[in-house]
Length: 365
Image (cartoon, rainbow, N blue to C red; front, side, top):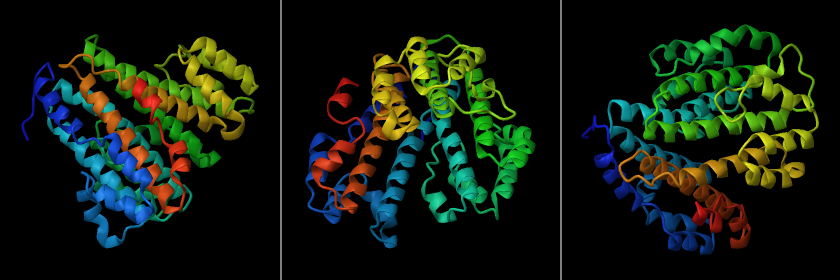
């Protein structure tokens, strides 16, 4: 594959625009939603670009878990193509965008090992499209217990772009005393965004777009954390310990002041005033009593996707790649919802209600 050590993205963007053409159109979604049952929905997918990935796993049967693996394979296959287009600074920016899945995969492994989830189930939930490949992730999973998996991360990470083992080692003693996995997860978050932010200190337009995406990721984590822990009495840690720098909440002291308000409604009101996400937060708050902080997590994810779908204004900039990445991620998210809905016998109207940003939301994006 030709790599492009250029300051502009003209060659890569032309290749990515060709990949846009393989995204599913509304007629395919209609076929899927109108399918009489699960098997008919799979038959529809087999006639799309997902057919190759479904066929790859078909020997394991056509179970929903198998189709999930096919979706993951397709996502990895397409995003790997994008990584192959670049070298130099453009490659660094693409890696910064994709590194969020390294963080996701490591957390998925730690949570799975802690909960004694079968190793095959942990593996099925991985999305290896960052810099940590599938083989390495499986080696971490195949350790006998959680502590051994942590040790494996420390060992392997010496060669990674972001050496996550440093964060785990620094907080391992605290984790072993408290047995609270959020200690390690928070350490990973803070370390991850510190390293990514170091890469994004330049002032050019493409770096600024990537920085905007990363800033929204940080804001999402901080907002969800505030809604999750407000009102709790922290033991030895302080509120500042939960803060990730680099987002719309300017300082750790600001974060602590908001959390000190205690009641969720007061924290919510403070977030309305201090962050640029009023409509998003209002939608989340409307569902807070029913869904808790996950309502804020979902609405912030929708906000980020919607923002990323507006970033391709410069045909020679990285915004074209950002938009494609999120369109593809959104497509697979909705396909998972449809296939799972069909597998448990939900009717079309029930599935449609669960879709993530279809219809008017997606068109606005």
